[in-house]
Image 1 (cartoon, rainbow, N blue to C red):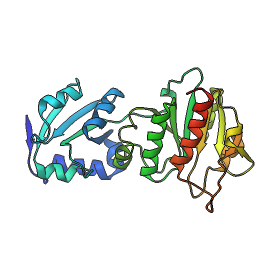
Image 2: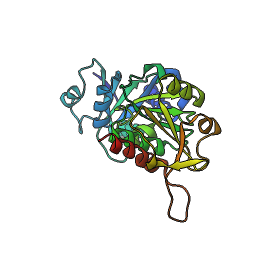
Image 3: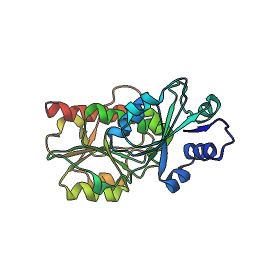
Image 4: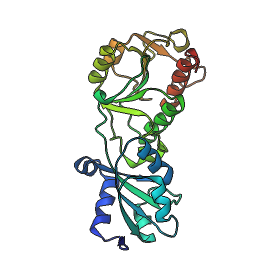
Length: 262
C-alpha cells in the first residue's frame, strides 16, 4: 500500500490545488470528499471514487472497505498530511478523491408529478449547502442551480451540505436553459419575488411544480419573472424585507409538501 508522510509530496500539493481552485477541479474532473458519512452517501449517489487517503490511527482499512465495494486505491497518510488536507475541524481520518458528474438537465429523471427547487445566482457556498439540506429534507425530485457563482464541488458546498450534494438529483444550467427545460416538461414555475406576486400559500402546488428562489440581495432576475406561472411572496411581518434563502426555500417547499399530503 502506498504511504505518504510529507506535505511536500507532489500528490499532496495537487490535492491542495483541488481543494482551493475550481479550475483544478474542472480540469481534472475530480473533487475531494471528507468524512465517512459524506463518502458513504457519495457512493450511494453513484459517484465513483478514485483514491481514499486515511489516517490509520483513526480509521482502519477494514472500515474503509465497508464504506464502498468499489475498487479504489488506498493511501496511508501521516497526521501532518491529513491536517494539511482536512477541511473540517472534526477529525474522521478519511478523505476521498471522487470523479465529478456533468450535472446536466438532460440527466434528470423526474417523477410523474415532480417538485423541483430552482436557485438562481447564489454566491455563498454555505447557502447552497443549506439549500441542498432543505431539498433533501423535503425529499424533492431535483434541484436546478441556475447561473451559479460557485462550482458545485467547492469543498464548502460539500461540507455545508453534509452529504446532501449526493442525495438529490442536481443540474446546473443558465436561467434560460432551466426555463426552457421546465416548459418542455410542462412544469409550473412559481417565482419568489415581491413584484406582482401573491402570497405563497394561496397557490396550488399539486401539479408539476418548480419553486424558484434567488439571492437575498437582488432576488431573481427579470427573465424568471417574465416566464413564471405565478410570482409568489412570503409575507414579512418584521422590520427587514428578506430572509435567508434556504429558510425561504424551506417554507415554500414544505407548503407544497403539505398540499401534497407529505
